[in-house]
Amino acid sequence: MLEVAGITKVFFPGTVNERRALEDVDLKLREGDFVTVIGSNGAGKSTLLNVLSGSIRSDAGSVTVDGRNVTRLSDYQRAAYIGRVFQNPSAGTAPHMTIEENLAIAKKRGMRRGLRWAVKKSLRSDFRDDLATLEQGLEERLDDWVGLLSGGQRQSLSLLMATFTNPKILLLDEHTAALDPQRAALVTKITSELVEAQGLTTLMVTHNMEQALAMGNRLIMMHQGRIILDVEGEDKATMSVPDLLAEFEKHRGAELSDRDLLQ
Image (cartoon, rainbow, N blue to C red; front, side):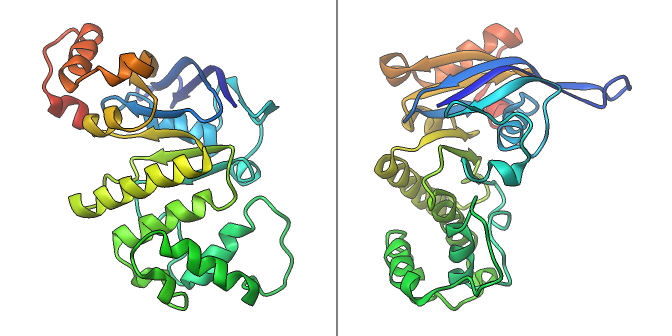
């Protein structure tokens, strides 16, 4: 479903600020895989998602989605294949448009758009049903500006919008990190339900190691632009936070606390 081959990305090459964000990364996801990604700051997690989404172009390597090479496609061209939710709840929605209008735009992702009014009455019933699954009363607020919603509500809406067109790949970039614990738990629950219901192939970056172990069928750890651990199935199910820390210590060469991976 997703194949990343030899991806390398260097920022500010040839300067004193040169930083190798990704170093010859290979990764394959099967259809329906739910992979959590952990690693310290600067490990290359978000850069990997940016390369996959087309937000930035790699210096070398290729990205293939469902058999199609999308390496040279920009982010808007990949929108038909890839859905993404960002860490910032404000990033995935248009604040000065209504909930209904945001949903209508998401419904057209990856499709040709004309100059017709985007919201059709026939869609409103479907929108209400979809919003009701979020259990936040948003189905009764279709005409409210999205900018009036709380962070948790906006993130839930972003998640729903990202999965509207049943994308080939769903990218989640620390999408619960900016929320309070209660809202983060709700968005995590919604995430699990949507991914399972639609069988979405998912790559989720998180700094929460317990979350990384609890969610998905596979876990990868990154360090200095490389994948240093890839576990799945029973191996993942039996791992603990101390096991992850011990694995990271092998590569960093120093004793760690959980704070090191949470920063």
